[in-house]
Image (cartoon, rainbow, N blue to C red; front, side, top):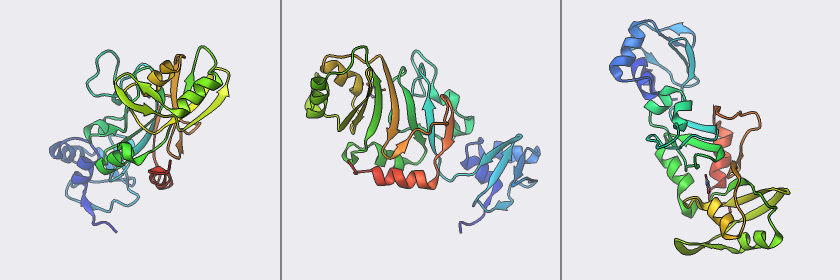
Length: 242
Ligand code: URA
């Protein structure tokens, strides 16, 4: 069992502001722990299963944050954006304050599954190309993909900036105009460039899964949720599994 920690440190670790600000939140009677008001910022609290309430909003304590987010179109995956608002503007402020980062980026017009975390080791494990984690994209094309285009994707496509071929590790025709394609790398605009290289075009792009984690059907666009320990276990098992 983890050692109890002062409520001020807990609030700071969760992204509620500077240590000073967190202690002022307590003095202003704005913090409850498991439903009870805390009065002393130095009060030590057990973190297991802890539910905070800060300024009237419930907040689950998580030592490290691991979340799934359903990215809507027209948002950029960076903090300093150029033409569109940032996906971080759709997340609670404490997530940004505690430094959550997208695990791999999606283009501004791509929708779907983004994993977001503040655990550097986890981010590294999920993004290093050596780990071969499969990402499934649903690609809407103006013309149905032909069998020879699909074969070309599976046999490897050369993109203009790199002599090493890019492969689809799986392709499944979902409907006439939608192909589900799995890739393990994350090169710049990789899916759009692969589809262009075989003579078709991407009208819409949606990421449906990362490793064994499939976008939950009830996670609406713009919504996020905590990943549970089972989700994290499945994701870890996906690493190196292709
Ligand atoms: N490949 C692309 O071309 N765009 C994305 O957003 C993700 C993968």
